[in-house]
Every structure is written in structure tokens, then in C-alpha cells.
Length: 163
Image 1 (cartoon, rainbow, N blue to C red):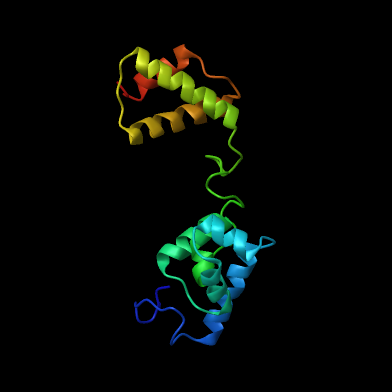
Image 2: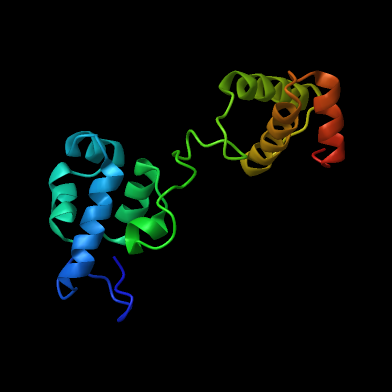
């Protein structure tokens, strides 16, 4: 973790016991009822490394980001204890666009309809542009509690200048 005073990376050496205890306590809270082994597996790191962090070592930024994401907490809270531990109370994979649950059936329907419309109209979009378009369309249909139809999808593609 970056040491706020020196700007250097530390793995627990030379940092105060109070900070180590704080981080390890927050990590334990973030892990919750999961086993260390299952949490480590979800993070893609070894359980022995997670145990080192629980014992007081500090992770590098890359590991902290992954652990915060998997635990569904904010990186700021995990790293510093400041801010809210709640990152919408959900991991990004489950977090909706407005903080609610994603309707996966609706998302699948929006994606299928949109991709079919793009193919029919022979419109090629880069992946990032496709993702933005799908996000706009999903928000539109989710806010209206409607299923996607080709006319509306086509109109939104035109309005968004994805042509």
C-alpha cells in the first residue's frame, strides 16, 4: 500500500501498528463470513498472502483494488478507513446502473435486439462504443419497464449518432 507520508510502497515494514491493525481489521470485515481460502480464490491471490494482510502486512495497490472489488467495498475505505465501506453494497458485477439490481433478462434482450439491429444496418462499432450504446439502451428500457423493440432501438441509435 502506498505510504501516505513518504509516497513509497510498503509491505508493512516501517508503518505504525495502529495503521496495520486498522487495515487488517477492515479487510477482515470486508471478507465477512467467507473463508480466507474462498476469498483469496475469488481475488486470484494465494490464501497465504491474504493471511499476511490479515496479520498486518499491507498489499500493493493492485492487490488492494482486487480485494476491494471482490469484497464489494470502496477502495478508499479498505485502504484508509475513510469514507463509506459501502460501495453500493454490491460488487460491480451485481451493481446496477442506478445502484439497483441489473435485470439480466432485460440486459440480454437489449443486447440481442441491439446487436441484431446493428448487423441489419451494417453498423460496425468498436467494443467501447457498443458498451456505451448498450448502457444507454438498457437504462432507457429499464426506466420504462419495457422490453426492447427494433423501432425504439433504431431511433436511439440514430439519436445517439451511432451510425
